[in-house]
Length: 451
Image 1 (cartoon, rainbow, N blue to C red):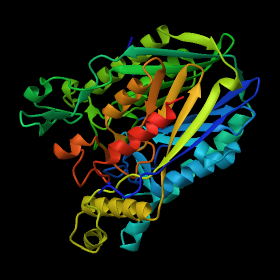
Image 2: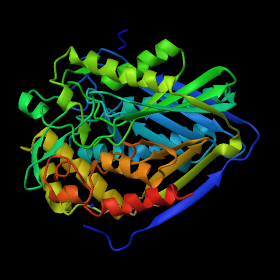
Image 3: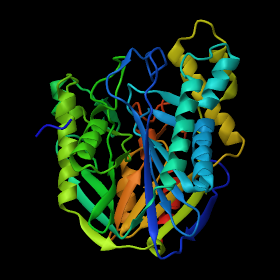
Image 4: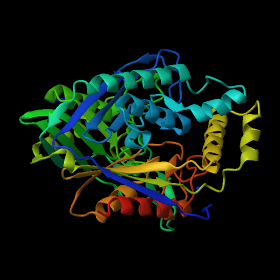
């Protein structure tokens, strides 16, 4: 069936933990349209049309303590001041605090960017509205917040939590192919038309899709899925769409009549390039493969009773080391150069925004939701899959899932060795952090998963 940063002097991790206590756990889900209007900027082109709606959807956990909100949106990324504002709006709507809200993008490319810090910098340089449509972006946040408030009024009790997993076949492959010298020989992007490059080994991936479900007796209330890959089959069409992971999610929701919220895992160095030549028809093929994995994860489901005492939320606030290439003077020179290209000005604005934010002492909140048997980590940026695999190894007897693409400000986040190997993902244009980032994030994950 077809269904379609140099290392900084001080490493600081602040950990806060709380456990809700109540006899009954409740959840509520929300879903609003996140599609841009015609003419509004997508990540690379203006919107010509919406070929398939983008969505902003999520789940609220309610007990005796303050609620927890998880949100996934079909956008390229949500960064800096925009990420702060999004979390704050949802927190206010849910009657909780921003540190108990996690917002993630699925990273589709025919979809909007959202970064109010970069837009402010661009506007100051005379380029307002070229890359970001603030009015539209904020309107989605407002509607999502309204939907959270409305959803809480219809929250349902949860008696059981289910977990399942399945291998997704012939979708994910590693983008960074190393040569004999240990450096990146070729980058196998998500759409790869070179048959020789496609024929190269899959490389390091996490092939497993994770599923968490919530039930009230025999009624399934919601499903969360997690899978690590860049979600592009092809793009630069001007047609807003959720691409193949969104298609698979939508199909399973239609098939099961259960609200389905999908999160992109640590897929910064993962894509479908081995299996995808970029042809239009292959989008459906990839969607069907992911949907098949989702379906088989449903078939492997194990349900266990749960109360609010089984719900935990822990956070670690981290400061990521800045990349050596983030220097204010040269960045401002690009912004002031009338001959600079739009992509170069945008990159300079994003770099400067992250530099200013880090120098102001802003931290990233990494979090862990524990519910029943499941442990779900929420991390920033275009995280390499090695972080996801390491998290699972830190708790080998637990069901560990990961949502990356949270705070998008740092861009790509590689492993320490990756910064010496070359390649696009750890280049000055793509990553705004330095090699010591691995030490910081691994420590935070270990702290969160230690109990």
